[in-house]
Length: 248
Figure: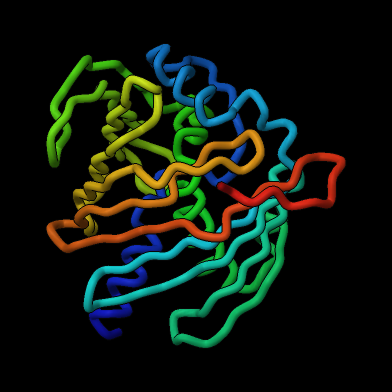
């Protein structure tokens, strides 16, 4: 495998700290959860989530001079149906639809490449919701801190995942939350030994599609290498409507 392919697969697995089912879960003993996490989720539109029939977006990722990829997604949260357009690890075009609850019946390519990419890209696109839904993770408000890069301060809220469960147990996301309850920066610490061990990225380019707020622009570094993640063609479809509402 070439170094470029290794990097692509690394990026696909960059943020696979999520649970296999992308939906709220209940836990017998919930860890400490700072109230600011609820405020952040409400700012992004969690109170209107039950109105969302479908979300579409294109996840774009690039490490300058090393790789550039684009994954086009359409997700129906109520049925967990996923549609994907992109390329496989060999650069060949791929177009597939599947239901995540029936993942065991899918091809190896879907199970080992497409669905892990979906989890990664969905967390980049909707992490404030996942932080709210993932009740196994603790969230403790640390108070005001300087941003990791550049001027300014924000409320530091580390999201710590347990040492077991999920794709990469023990992950920590340091969320930097601004006065308007929007995430302005995060630092990701990988729980396992595989790279990247540390990712820093901005949360900017805010747009709203229907009732849902999206951050579409992320620039930073993955283990010191320049990183750019950007989300394009964002739109949502509300229950009872066939019309897509583009982000603006």
